[in-house]
Amino acid sequence: MSAICVIGTGYVGLVTGVCFADMGNTVHCLDINQERIINLQKGIMPIYEPGLEELVERNVAANRLFFTTDYSEALHNAEFAFIAVGTPSGVDGEADLSYVRDAAEKIAEVIDHPIIIVNKSTVPVGTGDWVADIIRKKRGKNTLEYYVVSNPEFLREGSAIHDFMQPDRVVLGSVHQKAAEAVAALYQPLRAPTLITDLRTAEMIKYASNAFLATRISFINEIANICDELGADVREVAQGMGLDKRIGHAFLDAGLGWGGSCFPKDVKALAHMAVLHGTHPQLLQAVMDINRNQRRRVVMKLRNLVGGSLVDKTIGILGLSFKPNTDDIREAPALEIIHLLRNEGGHVRAYDPQAMENTSKAIPELQLCTNPYEVAQDADGLILVTEWNEFKQLDFKRIYSIMRTPVLIDGRNQWDSQAMRKLGFTYFGIGQGNHVQAAE
Image 1: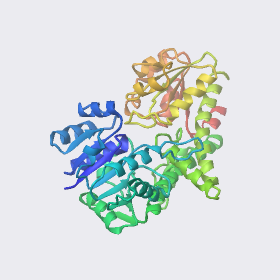
Image 2: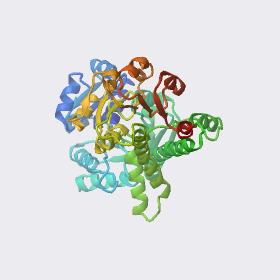
Image 3: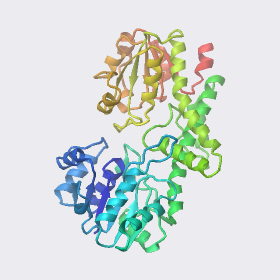
């Protein structure tokens, strides 16, 4: 078994460290956020991720998993140092690499033995070479054997542990074949297909993958909008498309678009890289525009359904996290929809099973409710934004009776449109031919 240091205890770093520990390795998870580390040492998780708390507890008890703010402690005898820090978007969409730089410089200052440095963060093409240069310059004449490997992550929030333990593929990039093979050996127990490339190709695989998935979502949302105008049902369109083996069913669910910490940031960063190097990312720009317009379209539809104005209307929001099974609200569709509703004079209240605390910090003045029925009380409209399981089987007779104006906007096509209309609701789904139905 190996000694591993993981720098960064966000979604990627914490899941990576915990899962490697669960595979029998000794792992030190490091973060400069002292409060976060103290809480982790007490068993308090900084994020909501199904199954994570149990894994942490088990591996801490087995003396395989440790949490620290001390680089010397974390890197002592470490054979691998995984950099899994944040790379947020800059002003022009570029990835902010300041945390990566800080981690690389600290590694260079502390290491006193050969080590393999693994870039786990999503970083621009060329970052692997840049990290190697930082370490070389920082150490100066005090040379030491070290190698840099790119190992992009493909974890989905809400199912990150499953994705780590049962990956579709492991991608590794390095100019040193043996270093890449050493990292591949860490993943060998998972028996996943492993692709070893050069550094820049591995970095590009990550961006290209996320951009393609975001493109599929924006494509089906554009088709959904056309379906609304022509009287077709995008759910059946997607099913028919997905039966073609060349297309498949994944990421063809029409809705309110993509959000979270990966797709928005990575598509922007890839487009920025393209422009910076003289290419014209027209498709990527369209993908981002469609995604942004999807939220605006829903607000426009609601406005029309409640009489042409949202001034002094009370609107309920069901779901705040960008997807189910996470408390992450970064780039969440709900935040933009709430902003648009309030800009038009609407009064907004909301509920989410996990993301209330994060939302209260981001929008302190937002009225948060204790359950979906409190959200619906005397509301003029109700928007389903995040498809949490608990929203599937609500008591809709009760909701109909307590709403002032029974208008439902089903942003995830989760509810039975015929059943909702039969109860008396004015119902709008995404791409269900609503425009033609309303005209009839």
